[in-house]
Length: 253
Image 1: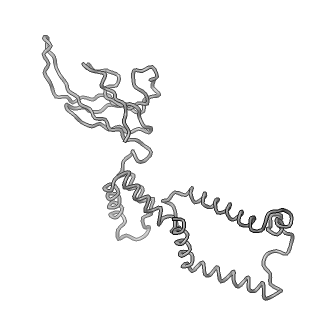
Image 2: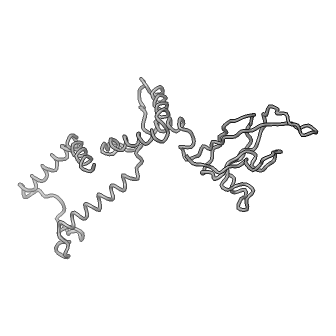
Image 3: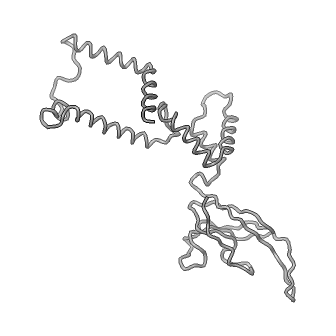
């Protein structure tokens, strides 16, 4: 892979007109400095303390070690700087967005799904097709993608809670009759299990009323942190024959 990237960058540089213009300028300067004694490059003043000739004369460091060492350090520093730039903001660096871009799209497919990406691309196409500048950028695509993918992929977590609820009336003899349920019930997500010793208000990630109807359904909560527990009627405010199954430990996907 290193050889492929280096070969790609070399072809890219050699194919750039700017490269050959700079090459011609430096060639003419060097040629003039060699052939004409009245033309020189650089300063004729004092030699810098860290100049290669000064290092060679005053230390045991060889010229090759010095120059290659400085080049390697500068190269690593440049790579660290490039690594700090998000892929979405890379410009004019084909060796980065050609290779990393394909890998990033494949990773997105695995994370959010192909259909989510296609929806984002269709929305971006509908927004910008056949229009003058400004043309869409990678950051515009990410904005559409975040909207389609949902909050769980934007630094938040989508908590899906599968619940089954029923409502019954009991007469004086204990006979129960089911009735339709359509009630606002507390639903929450927590960092610790409600009712335990280590639970307090700081462990509540989110809490609010949601309409719960008879039968099975999936409720959704959005949190800023991954929850450890989630449940319906977590503090047992409703009359419930089995209140121990109201809160369950979260399972990550």
